[in-house]
Image (cartoon, rainbow over all chains, first blue to last red; front, side, top):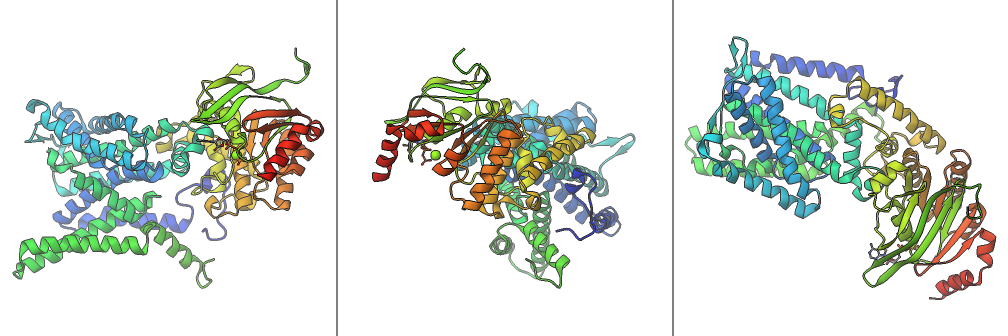
Length: 348
Length: 262
Ligand SMILES: Nc1ncnc2c1ncn2[C@@H]1O[C@H](COP(=O)(O)OP(=O)(O)OP(=O)(O)O)[C@@H](O)[C@H]1O
Ligand SMILES: [Mg+2]
C-alpha cells in the first residue's frame, strides 16, 4: 500500500525498497539511533548488539536459501563455522580483513556447494537430512584434520583487524564494524528480491516443475541458492572469528543452526525484514530473560532451575508468536502499517 | 519437399513412444506444427494429450522417437534449454507462481533472455537496473496485450482462476517463443472468459506470428479457431487434418461416442 501522490517515472522506481519520503526519513532516524547508540550503551550491550548484527548476517543467508529458494538448510551454523575457520587461518597469514572476509565467504560458499550438489536432487525431508549431514560432518572433519591445520579440539587464535595503526579490540570498534557490514548485507539481501536471480529462486520455491519448463535451470538455481546463502554465512563466520579472536568447533553447533532457522521463521521467511525482526525479537527476548534470571539469582534462586525456566519462557514466547502470526512478524508489521495508513477506513 | 513447400515446419514430433510401466501413454505419435498454424490436439480423457505436450517441452523423456524444433533435433535437451530456444508453454490447471505478483510472474518468464547473475542481483548496479528497466517495459507490453493492467501488482495467489490463466499465458509469452504450447487453457472457464482467451490466441497467431499447439476439450472452440486438428485416442493418432476433415472421420466419431459411453 502506498499513499497517494507517490509516482514513478521509471519501472525500477516501483521496486525500490524505500519509496516514500516518510520511509526514507524513518531509515535516517534508525541509522542515527544505531550510530549514536554507543554513546549511551555499556560495553556489555555493545557486545550483545555486535553479536546480533553477526547473527543477522547468517540469518540473511538462510533467508536466501530457505526463504527465497525454499530449500531447507539445517547446517547454516556449519557454514558460518567454515567462514570462521577460514578467516582464522587466513588472518594468521597476515592478510588484511578486506581480503580475509571475501575469501572466508567464498570458502563457506564453495563448501556449501559440496553438500548442495546431492541435496538439490532431493526434496523436503531428505533435503533436511542431507544438510543435517553437513552439520554433523563439520566438527568431525575439523577434529580429524592435523592439529597444526585448524587447531583441532583446542581451536585457533585469530589475528585482530588492523586499520593502519588502529587495532580493532574494544567493543565499540566491533559494534561499528559489524554494524557497517550488516548494513551492507542488508542492502544486498533486499536487492536480491527484485533481481533476475531472486525471481528465479522464488519460481523454484513456488513451483519447481513449472520453473524448469519456463526456462529456469532449477538444479543450478537450487545449488546457487545454497552458495549465495553460505556467502552470507561466511561473512558472519569471519566476523565471529574477529569478534571472539578465537575459534573452536564447539561454537558452530546444530543447536545454533536451529536457532537461525527459528529466528527466520518467527520473523517471516519471505522478506529480509523478517530476518531483521526475528533476530532482534529473539535476541532481545534472550537478553531480557538473562537479566531477569540474574536478578532472581542474586536474590537466592537456584541457577539450574532458572536456566531451565528461561528456556521454557523463551520457547513459550516463540510458540505464542508463531500461533498468532504463523506468517511471521514481518507480515504482522505489513498488516499494521496498512491499517495505520488507511485509518479510519477499514482494511479491504 | 513434402507437399507444403511454402510452409515452414517449426516443431515436429516423430514417432514418439512413451510408457509408464504397463501404461502406453503414447504409441508412435507424430505431430507437425507449421508456421502460422493453430494446431489443436484433441482426444478423450487420458488419451495422452498432456503426455505428448510434456514430451515436446522436455518434461517427459519418450522411450522412442525424436522431437525437432526449427529443423534441429532437441530430443536430448532439458526443458529449460528448450524454453530458451523458444518453446513456450502454458499448463493444465493452475500453475502460476502464487506468491509473486502478475508482473513478477511475467518477468520470471524472461529468465532465459536476461543476463544478470547473482552478483548483479546482490549489488544491483547501473547495468542491472538498466536491464530490469528494459525487461519490465517488455513485461508491460505483455500486460497491455493481455489486458492485465489493473492486476499488475496483485499477488497471483489471490486472483480468480481466469485471470491466473491469463498470467500463465503472459509468462509463456515472455519466453518470446517461436511456438506456444497450451494445455487445456479454457478448462473451467466461463463462456465469456473462453471468448476472451480465444481472441488472445488468434491475436498471438496473427499479431505475434507465433504458431500455437492447443489441447482443448471444447469442440466448438477447437473447430472455430484451429487450422489443423490431430486426434489422439489411447496414445495413438487416429486422425489428423483440417477441422472439417476430422469431424467427418468415422474413427473420431467412434472414439468420442465410445469415450462418452464408458
Ligand atoms: N507421470 C505419469 N506417471 C504415470 N502415468 C502417467 C503419468 N502421466 C500420464 N500418465 C498416464 O498416461 C495416460 C495419458 O495421460 P495424459 O495426462 O497424457 O492424458 P490427457 O490426454 O492429457 O488427459 P486429460 O484430458 O484428462 O488431461 C493416462 O493413462 C495417465 O494415467
Ligand atoms: Mg491433460
